[in-house]
Picture 1 (cartoon, rainbow, N blue to C red):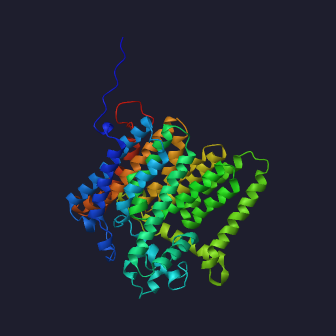
Picture 2: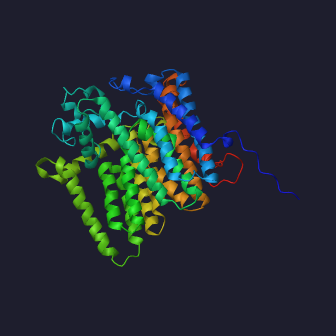
Picture 3: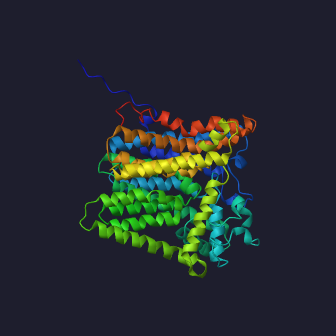
Length: 489
């Protein structure tokens, strides 16, 4: 009996890598033309997708454009997994990523205006010689960019001292040139994004899948939008974690963990990852591991003290650290927006106070984090622990932001790329779908709420939250395939 011939490749499956890059570049070019940075750089208040595309058809077109870019990632992944990425695969992937990012450098930050606050808070130190942890931007009413500070003008910095040091250097260079400042922050995020791509490559096992999995990061539309369009400082946070993890995997445990701690000193949310990597280091059977762990702990405390020292009034680093912690707790527990916690609030008919629901979800997160830490102690992969803890935070927080979806993804990639487990592959697919649905959430909560649901927040939550947070786990059951061959992801 003759073997069954393989299925014919679909139209997408026939696309070559250069054609995929060209089509993707066309899509990103359209985004850059649609949301131009240069002509709207000083727009006050800062714009978003609805200010550029106020109509429902405009929102639908944007959603289709983003979905189309994600669709092109599928044949790119499958082609690289089957045929490789040429004689210099890492160079090809990074070059393609850089090419796709070029128009995005000149795209207005449509999904996050934080980059303007990076500039304004950086100027608190570089121009006015004060600490962004002690003085809010609102105190500088004569600053030429204060109108772009938005709703957070009266708050001090929520970021770590390393980030504020970086921001002060960038704004010292850009001076009163807002465009230069924004572009420098975007360029920094792009460099961090490309460096993380290279580190992912170095941590994945050799073979064709190495290039394919690296491509899932480097050519990922959601990540390019988060890191380059919005210039988010998550790019630097993730880079520190990835670099530290690579060092620990090369036997340099103390140095690696100290580098990881720079992530938390850049953006405090990264502290959620550190216990899992600490346990991972402890499990390494080196003869001097107890001494190494002691030195690591001392090093982290010293590094934290040194990082906060330039920002501390009267040299009191501890007080500045506590002030930042208090600021973050206030932000996390005050107010609520698009999130599963608010979905519960709406589903209960707004009869239970949102503060009560927030307290319950915070308790759930604490319990989940402790349970995941216990599993790590029992030998579960640190990669899975980090991804799961970030995701647990995302689904229990009172507020969800688009860039949160990027936090678990590199660890899902490494977990799936280093083994053939169907569970790891399923989790990675869910992470990919979540990146897409989170990007589309702005259309659900913006255009669809305004134009189709009469501005009703409750109805929007009841419909959109399941689409963003639950649908990815259902869609992940679909094979990540193009041409009918057996699927690994």
